[in-house]
Length: 158
Image 1: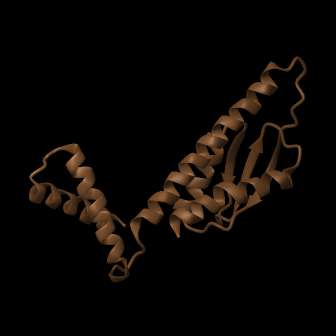
Image 2: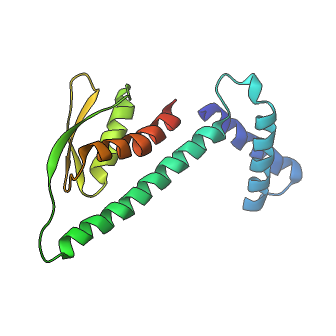
């Protein structure tokens, strides 16, 4: 992926030199032309076309921002209620992610989302112990994590 990005940047610079247009717009035009050129030649590269991976990263970032906003609203809702109605608890979450980077990213995303905290990762890295501020249904929380963060992380890393 990094090779394709660097190659695309070099193609953009070559385009700027050939077009004698040393502006940001000239670079963007060259980058888009280089992207089309690399897309046409994608079957000659060992790795898949890099924009697919970049798009997966953008989707993961968007998913995290959405969950961040929704979790903040939920936590604020618990704070402003006159009576505290939370049911805190800890549950074990079995993950299908295997690499250190994937498990670490999942643990960090869970911890950065308000209302949840990754307490520990098992030695085999297949189970995360998570504390939630309101654990009405642990199975529903597990389905949400698997369907959102874990799926998006797999798209980025595989």
